[in-house]
Length: 159
Ligand code: MG
Image (cartoon, rainbow, N blue to C red; front, top):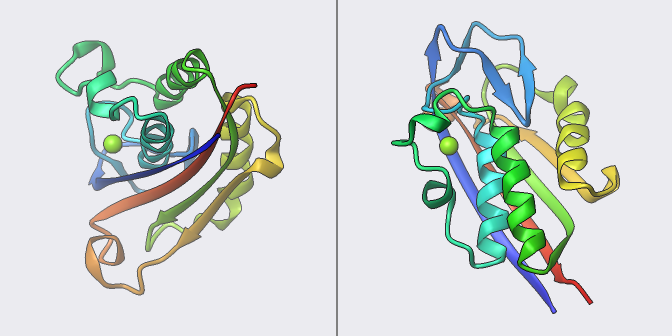
């Protein structure tokens, strides 16, 4: 039995914040605003995993009203999610992601993001794909107001 899940997230870009995507710090003059470290890519991955297992969504497990998650490292939240997925009896087959950002150019960081995600998910690097896109200068991502991310994950029930 296999199950598919989809995740999406968007955070606004703001001055005075570090930019963290896929658990990787990225050199840029602005970062994503949010309660946690606002790592939109990791948040999309978490929602895809939870969705595939029909275990709700990121806001139910890690509410942004909870002071425990203020400035949280989203990779820690992903680790907790992986434990939930495993406890529910699933293994992760593969994951594919898009990050939509007009700036900065993310190409040089993609392999490091894949490596970070693969390690946390405890799967081989060739099972993790992260792709970057601009938004052709239109919409909130294209105007540099926000960065968004999408993830699709496949789970398999453990034999
Ligand atoms: Mg988020």
